[in-house]
Length: 247
Image (cartoon, rainbow, N blue to C red; front, side):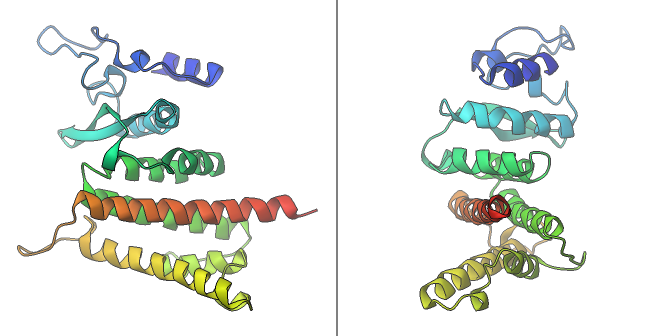
């Protein structure tokens, strides 16, 4: 994995066969050989801790997406994720995914882009977890912007309040504008964030649920993740534009 990561960083490209090449892994045993397909040896739970798995996925996915593929979390072994290379198409991917990935990775690869990658991985296979990750993404972006702007927030602040605080630092609060059309658009952005916070409380895996609880489908998760990614990218792009305009 380290050799693969180094090769990827040095040359800025990745060949799909690099991570799906059949063959035995050094840690494989005769009774349990690891093969390159359909899961990747590099990311298999037998060879990587979960934190390292997700770190590598965050590095590899933006590169794979250029060729129409991504590493998706498709199952688990003893609670650890198993990733499979899948083609992006239909509900598995959206046209904006690569742009959002690039923007968020440039802003903060360690936590912001990792949250986005986790949301993408779960979008079709684990809708409840994807909705949780979508909210985590927005919370993380808002906190980063508030901190970078010299502001403060409380650990008790929920997503709607975090967004309002970040928006004020970015001059994106509706009451900071006089043009009615901008007030409406920015107000609707706040409404989207409020709705994402609400759907997370009702449909995500962040809370226990009763027998008759409504479970989200992949299309619900796709909507939540795509909206969160779009709003997060808008916030990051606005922050970077304001930074670039400063003398």
